[in-house]
Length: 479
Image (cartoon, rainbow, N blue to C red):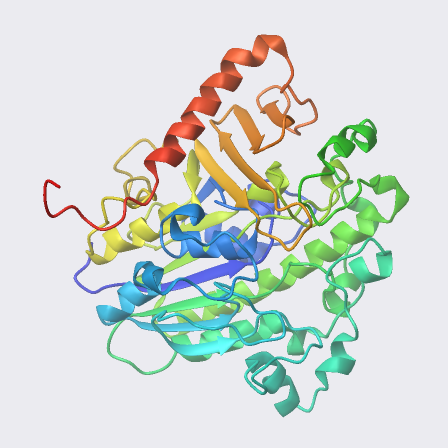
């Protein structure tokens, strides 16, 4: 590692699936700048979020610990536990001289018509915007994006209109939004470029956290208009799921009833979702160009990922909840540092988002705590180990994460072939063989010949969560 500590540009979108990058296998989306990042770094093809919901996932990947061990399991929580703030990577880096900035979401606690209560997070620059839609926030005038729109002479209520964050109505799910130059994603990139090009002596970390491609799917009109709707793929769906999904009614999900994608304009919905990602891609390009123009690209680690995925009509479901399909928990992860990390590598290793923090700690020379659940990816990034193995399995969890009626609890374990989903307190569960059934249509939970696989995964899952328990204060005496 070089003597000079690298800058870190960490881009985290909201609710972006793994299969949304052209260079990684999606021919129907244009992502030339993410493709460029893939060619300049390592793309982890099997990266998984530790929760399919925002707050627990973000708390987890910003600390390197699983959500339940942080006591951060819910969206809408009153506050981020003060005792856990010291685990935040931004706070750790700020203490050793990093200048830390944020634009967009943080979402470590509630942000429902109130400005999020910040822990001691280490950010010097904090340009906060949870979501861009017309909703008053308290305290007033502290929603930075809304204030910026006002300063530009744009009335944000007129620009966005009354948007619902949930619903099956096509007009709410996919409609043109605000033009690109005033879009929150563009604003996030503007703020990042301003921060990255400030004069300073030491290293910096910039968190860029746009709300897109989170629903409602409302890209700028000029992006939506250029999409070839007829060429979009249909959601993954088997008509039998109209009945089989009913067995999961008592488990939290923002889709209350399954719906056939043939009953609404699913291709237009996907086109709008892809258009949001194409806007993100353009802004990634602007940020990369700014790094190069300012002479900082060679000393900047760029991370691109998302907090979790989006069902996007797959299996009759939309949005997110206590389910662990690939669309919900499998996310993009690209890490690039030209001249220091491998370039053009597509790693098939199973990795978790908690692995980002120990990687950064190792890069900057800070110790990785012995109880941290993440495992450094640096050996793969630098070519010291086999690039296609990192973990034997990956985990994800859900514990009463959404304000839904059932207060569901679930855990997922995936070993690269078999995926087991356990819904605690319920007999029903899921077991899929992704080698034979990559689209997760055939639930093997009740198959007698799959019992050995089912029990083995249950034990491994149980063992891992029990060994991940927070043991409390360090031992200083025998008794």
